[in-house]
Image (cartoon, rainbow, N blue to C red; front, side, top):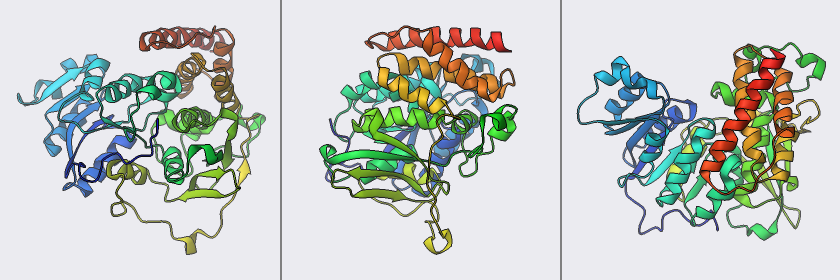
Amino acid sequence: MSIFEATWPEANRPEVLRVAILGATGSVGTQALDVCRKHAHKLQVVALSADTSAAKLIALAHEFGVKHLALADEHQRMSAAVNQLDSDIQLGFGNQAVANLAALDEVDLVLVSVVGAAGILPSYTALLNNKVLALANKEALVCAGELLMPLVKPGKLIPVDSEHSAIFQCMMGTHPQYVNRIWLTCSGGPFYGKTVDDLRNVTAAQALKHPNWSMGPKITIDSATLMNKGLEVLEAHHLFEVAIDDIQVLIQRQSCIHSMVETTDGSVMAQLGPSDMRGPIQLAFSYPERWEAPVKPVNFFELGSLDFAPADDKTFSCLELAREAGRIGKTMPCVLNAANEVANLAFRQQKISFLDIARIVEKVMEHTATQELDSLDQIAEVDGCARSLAQHYIYEVS
């Protein structure tokens, strides 16, 4: 399997690429639609999904002329916006309806930007139906990488996370056997340099103030705990077939270097760019072409300097927990992810402390047996059990 061959042979690339954007009202989805507006002559939005934002989704459908919609939240069936829907627009409800958009005949590329484990099924569906999968959801590969990666045909998977897009670009033209290690960069989040004592009483409001990136609440908290970087280690492991311990996390405070690849001869290739997701989103849409920049490029005269430091995985132990889950493999990364999603939300709801997030994830991992990974149904079962166990530990500490 190689994800580096051109997605479209030059003679076969559609003049207008038809895209489905799953998670259209979230941070990545919103920025993806900005790219579609800028390049309306090259991109046609043909399907959209959202979780609960019915009114926003329907407004987007009217703007882009989209006839295929899905809302993950079944409760939205009774919303006022849905009841006023035009008769020629098809709207489905539930996770399966979201995944069904990835199988539509009129879709060429599927951007999966839904949050959390909900991204597994649509990613699987896109690959199974021979679509190009532009993946902006970490959890699909974290939880189900062993099942999804064997389905990937050459050029049918393009990573959209800024770090994995960077690695993807750095590895173009380099055979995987010559990759020595990956340097996965990290801003350090809002609590960089803090001690455990400093973190005991931090609030969700403080954790949601990321210094460099504008993201959704779940991923922003994950960035504060460094769990986001741990999930990215697991994602990179599957995408680029690099061992967990050959993926080094490096603090790069300016968030200008998005990641680096070191080859066996000691050369290091880095990808630099603005802290804006529209760059990697556009690359996924345009690859193997390069279109006009969607945002102002980095001005190196103004940048001044680049700073580096090791990640503190003792204070921010979620990073090491993710690495350990990756070393164990099988169903353990799914357990890690499920426990983290529950603990992350509980912290945002002020039910637990910031430091409790890692404690709860660790407890769930310690008390869950590892299984060989064999199906999506099994992943759903493991996910549910891990969530229930995490809720139990949240109840104990709250």
